[in-house]
Image (cartoon, helix red, strand yellow):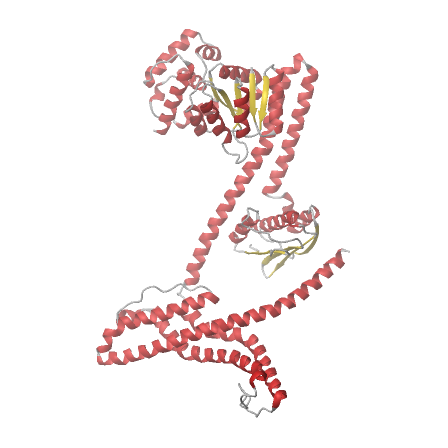
Length: 218
Length: 420
């Protein structure tokens, strides 16, 4: 796997490179800001681009802007946005470019290397990885009202994992239930929420997150 | 060595101060002349208005005058507003009074109109007389000083010289008298100007204005304090995020990588752990810095220790003079501390070789003065921390004065009410 990293903190940039190289992942270029990141992506055509959100010059949302722009210039480019904190508004901006090949994770998830590598691979393969924190923000904001209250606790767990971008098999593994059980839960969830059933994980993520977002706004 | 330097600085400061005094005196005299002239102008207007008011008052007795009352009241207000504008230029600002009441009955009840009438009488008489007096002195100065140039044309000497003038010698004496008048005007001019403005200042000010102005002031300083507070929080958030948080994330990543390497390659794992430890050490150091910047723990021991600590860490030689008889409120001392810290930090860019810091408590105030001999040009609008300091100081009802002409020196003076 070939990776480009955009991260303005030198120590973190080095640490991330070290970690990825130790896992036989090729770090083909590193960048310190949005502009040089876009150059590197255009030059290297990486399998995944890893971007920090706060970078020079304003240290606010350069990474989000750069990620959106990179996916606009190069549709289908897999991007993983890393951030010290997650902001639901940023997730919405990113998801507007489609959920396929998109990741948005807290920086500390990198420390759980095995899970991080799985997520990275999923993104590179066109899947989605949305941080559980984002999903939790959406779920807690809307507790106590609406259609979600009709979901069973198990169905809520499945819904959260779907929102994170996990496929059926991964959901089954995570909850230690069979594929059949996962299928059953998902059908039930979609019926209760009045959503069209969809087995494609990335379209499903968008549908579920949009549902949660709209429901929270209501 | 330090004492000598201080003494030298003090001497030059004294010299500078006496030079300043002459310049200040002359500037004061010119200002006074300008004020007296403008005051004379409003005085003549007041005199004309007074004549009109009296005439209308007499006409009112026969009835016809009642028709002229609204116009007269408007005239009175216009003349008073002119004086308000004049007084505002040199004294404290007086807002215009707006539209006057237009009926005789309403006007009689209106305290503003009554006070304006009182002012009108005073300014039309006393104001004009004192204005003429104030104008006479400078005229005498000009006449007498220039007399040697035209004494041949007339043997009637100008101003108060009534003796016959014989020859250049006498004329020069008259010129000398002119200089004496000049000195008298430098001394008396500002006094005359103040005296002339007195009725306007006292009678034309809106009543209770002290309170409303105070409220307006508090509203502004409170907003500024909140701004300063928000900016401060943003700064702290930034330094926490860019510093400690990033270091900890890096440590976390490195530990994750080390755990993966433990079995495969123990030597590499150790190296990674070493790096992770270095990262946590950095995180701690930066955390310490942020904590200190929020409220330096040493302030608990007193402002004296805290300021001495700042001086010790100053990039430029720093002389400190402390006279802190009483402790002030913690927030006041913190503000003073940050003001000194900011001023000392700024000397880094000013090319100064010596900074002098004076902090003392006097008359219930904490007064501090930071002077450096750098090239000046410090601008609080240019994104320096000084504007934040000003907002903090003003939120404490203190005063903030920055004097930093191009070429230097830079002097920061801050006064803070001590608080309880």
